[in-house]
Every structure is written in C-alpha cells, then in structure tokens.
Image (cartoon, rainbow over all chains, first blue to last red; front, side):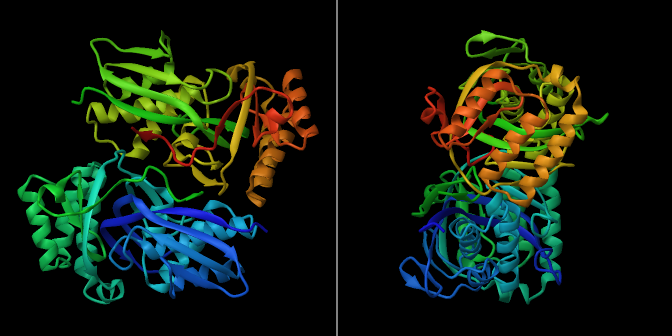
Length: 275
Length: 275
C-alpha cells in the first residue's frame, strides 16, 4: 500500500443534455455535450482509520465519493481542493468521485482498469442523483459529445476537435434533483434537437449555439443568466449556461468584453489523470 | 481558411498485438497494448499550391499522410518535427497521419468530429500497411489497451490507469510489412495470450511482463534487443521490445541502471491535441 496518491480531474460544463434513466446506474446517464476545463479538482487519497471527505479544508458529505470508497473496499481520508464552486454546474461531485476512484485504486493497489474505475464513479454519481454525464466526460477530456448514455461499457463518445480559452461567472446553485423531477419531456426534446445539431456540425460555435437554444427551450434560464448571455452576444461573443447551475460560460474573452470579471481557464486537453 | 494549424501527437510503443485484417480499412486493425509517450510528433499544416511532406527538414513520401490530405480534399504543406526515429516502432507515421487530419480539419474548416478524423487517419495507415493500432492509441493517450480492432466506430479501448517515466534505446528499423507477411499464426496466439493477461491485471508490471513473453513467443527478438532486456532485468528493471522496431523501452530508470544512455520521456496523459 502506498502512503498516498493524487489525481486531477478537469471541471466539466454541460451545454445541453437529455436524461436517460435505467435501473442499472452504470447504464443510466445522459446524452449531450460540453467543455472540460483546466480548472478542476485535485483529489488526494490517504489510508485512514476512518473515512472522511474534506473539500477545501471543510469536512463534508459527498455521497458518490463514499460509494466509491465502499465499492473499492477502502477506508481513507479524501482531501480535495477545487478551483470550482460545488453545485454550480461544473461537475465537482463527479470530479471528486472519479478522482477518488483513480487515486484509491493506486494507493490500495486494487488493479482495476481505467474503464472499471470510470464505471464505478459514474454509477455512484448516477445513484446519488448528483450528475448523469460529468464523470464520463471528465474521463475523456477535451470537448466531449456524449452520443449514447451510460458508463464506458455502454456509452459512445465523440468530441469537437478544438480548444479554447474559457471564461465563466457563477451566480449560484441550481438543484439537479429539482430540475430532473420537473417537466423533463420538454428538456429531452430540446436536448435531442441540440445533439443532432452538434453531430451535424461538430464545432465550438455550433455547440454554443445549440446550448443557448437548449437553455431557452428547456425553460432553464434565470434572469441573471439571460442577462449575461445577452450582454456577451451584444459584444459579438459566444456564451451559454452551465447545466445545472446558475453559471454562464463563454468562449475567448466574451464575458470580459461584456464588462464582467470572470474566472479564466481553458478547455482541458486530457481526461482525468494521476499526478 | 486559417494560415496554419499545428497538432501534437504522442509517440506510441506497442508492447504486444494481434493482427485483424478486414476488407474495410476502418474496421481492420489490431488488438494489443502499449504506452503513449510525451516524445512525439508536431505537425503543422499550411495551405499550398502543391502538397509536400517534410519531416525534420527533409521532404519525404508518407503514404498515409498523402491519403489523409486527399480524403480531406486539401492541398497543403505538411511540416513535421519528430523527437522519435521513423520506422523504429514509435508510431511516427501514424502520428503524422493523425496530426495531419486534426490540423487540416482546422485550417480548411472541414468541420469533422474527432472520431471522423481518427477514422480517416486510422484507415489511411492500415491501407498503407504502415501500422494497425498506433492511430487509435495515439488519439486516446495514456497507456491504452486495444480490446477490439478498428477505428472509433468499431473498436473498444480501455487503459492502464497509471503513468511512468519511460526510457528507450533504438538499434534500428524492422519492416512491419515483412513481419506481417511471415508466420502470423504464432504471433496472433501470443498476442491473445498477452492481452488476456493484461485484461486480468491491468497494471504496468503485467503489461511489461506480457510484452516480454509476447516478443519471445512471437519470435521477434533480435540479439541486441534480447541483450538489452536481459541487462535491464539483471538490475531489477522492467523492459521490453517496441513493436515493430529494433527498439527497447523500459520503465523508470531501467536502461540507465543497466549502463545504457537512453532517451528519456514519460507516458503522455492526453491523446493527440491541437496546439
């Protein structure tokens, strides 16, 4: 057993999605597309007498992380530091679950494959209801298009072959559970429409365009988000809403140009990695 | 149209493989496993009156690169610089084909997806007979396990969740075409055996062990390669032969410890990326 291991998992903003439930959490998930980010979560695993999860210095409960530790039969201290806010649409819980799976496998020498570890983290996240597609996107990196839902044994991924500077501002949280318990028929129809648009033209511009239509048609826009997206458009920028959070992300200098003081990062070329 | 675009593609040493021919080059390929490397090939594409391919300052013919340009209906100067020797088992031709696909798509705004570009490069490489699995491995990054052959529409990939310092020495070239026209029955049996070993225990140590057995059982070892692997083993290191080249790669400081003066790099965490 090693003393500790650390994994870095990129953040992930979803531009649009459709939900695909299944009794088996490793087959359930979402279709959609988004951007993985160089801002992300670093997770360090250290064997301990009693499991504990610490995010940016504060001990918290994160159900999918607990599930991952239990699945890997590990008792450990999970120390995470995040450049991104929790609950605001950046996939922080998915990142913590996937980082825990990768680093725990290394520390406790569980000898599982990458796909097996991604499957465990994805299933734990779906089961907890904290996310549907972040984990598989974060394992892939880049600008993933999720063509088929589920873990690596079932899903099908493609990607937009590009990279970009990304800016974002977050006004607050949105509850994934609340949204998914609402009218998902409209959301699913909007998600399918958006996906077919991006499959037809897999570019960053079409991804942002499809994402804006999705946010509008799915009825998820808040006043502050609408305002920010409109202001970025007014300066010829490209922005949309991160699903699911009261967060706006933009390509290049879109938010700065519109007078915001955004956080700045870029698309992340790689998936989750051990340090 | 942009003035130019550049892509970086990691090198790839195959530890073991089995060949899987098919009339459709996008379905043909190989099963196997190997390491992608931080040493790789940088490819810059610039529109030109007449296509030309330059590797490290010298104009050369690289059939899969020509095929990729033709498929993307592009006339361009392909300027590649490589940290790795051509023909020695590092996947340089595959890297040139994939880098050309990614950068050409960007310069000529062809709006293809990542999978479509990987499929074009893979098919071109298989058709030319210069490689069977390098392109899909190089698109994935890390330490890919190729469970099913073919391009992204058909294949199935997993990976060893690890990273390592890698050393290598190259004594010369081996002809892929010569090896594949020989007794491939023995090679295929050895490749299947090696793959099942690594699937059972997806770790770096088991990959190196399976690779050594494969090199021996497939009858591909040369005298100098055998000597180097034996000398690395004698100092408790892990080394094997790169398929297909007269090249030895080792984990950590294996070759240095054995008294060689190797090139030094590491496993590459990401697949091919646009700069």
